[in-house]
Image (cartoon, rainbow, N blue to C red; front, side):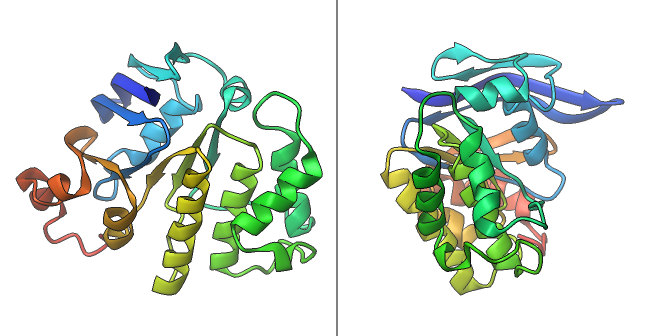
Length: 239
């Protein structure tokens, strides 16, 4: 069964076709990658899935239920959380307090807020930072805080938008290992990432988009040798 499925999703902005007829499914318990050159439409696709944007055409199904047109709040209560590309913690709060906010909201249902908070901190390896103010954290620490806050919302599907951006190789490995541990607990993950080494080593399935269109989908080994993928990335120094 698929945790999330998009069917024929399209979105334009004043004539610019940002996402064009994209269809893809992420199986339960998988880590899927969403890759493509800068400006390909990756973040727009995530915004469509989470209800921050309404599609011009197509639909989104979450665990078989059509969620197209739902508000972001309703989607969050249903069990989808997003870790954003640019972390914006509450600077006046501690790391633990920031993560606790995720535990207070998120997926509907009973939960032990303190236990969920502490578990998310430990899962991302930032338990020792719990009482530090969020203001002044390093880039790597902010990335882990952003994912921990999303994890504390107890999602069934975690969308991670460039969780390794700005990280060094060791930090990238630690982040991907944390995502692997999260998946091992039964959570489904869909991530946008430019670090191809990390994507190829961690993801079960990959969707590649360019100029808003899906150009390849499948296992990492299949996608890596796809001629359209090679062409799309040729000469892109940021990949």
